Image (cartoon, rainbow, N blue to C red; front, side, top):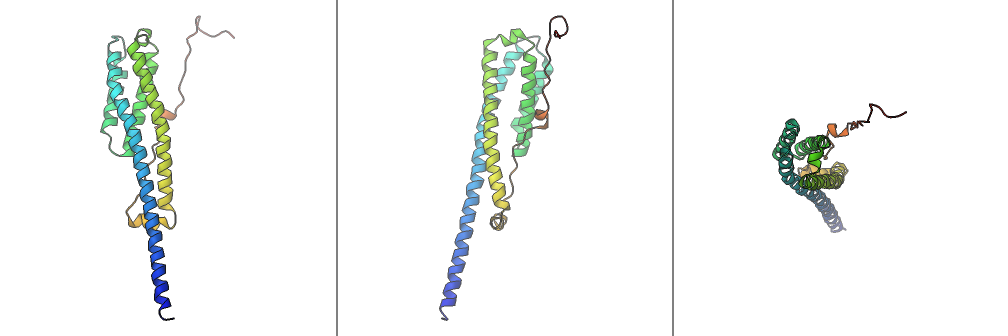
Length: 194
């Protein structure tokens, strides 16, 4: 009987240790899922950044094209490339998306620009990349949510705290991207028929 108590204590300690290791491994898996999801976004962001100088060059070829719009895209791209943390990158990429939206809206006013095949190809490519970014942002945010819930939940919060794991930031939509897009129609004769 005297031997049973130490054996039970050792088995209990091994069980608790094994459970803690299991929780730690699960947290590491979730952390790596967040990283992987972000790197998948990063690949698409890099591709978009690579396409933008081509798009700007085509637009600059149109002498009438608005310089302010191009400069806004150039500045937003530089800010996105230089941003460090995920939160900073998300905000900078949101600004870049907004600048691109304005560029495409202004391009609608220039039929000669829209008729250039290279502009059509590059703008189509950039629009496709925007869709891929949105899809991958959803996967990233799911991974972050799972990780954040795991490090806040009992008892894994003790393991996460001991391991120094902190919450990850979600990839949020920029405030400017939430605003309604204004659409104006130019009707011949001034107004639509009632």
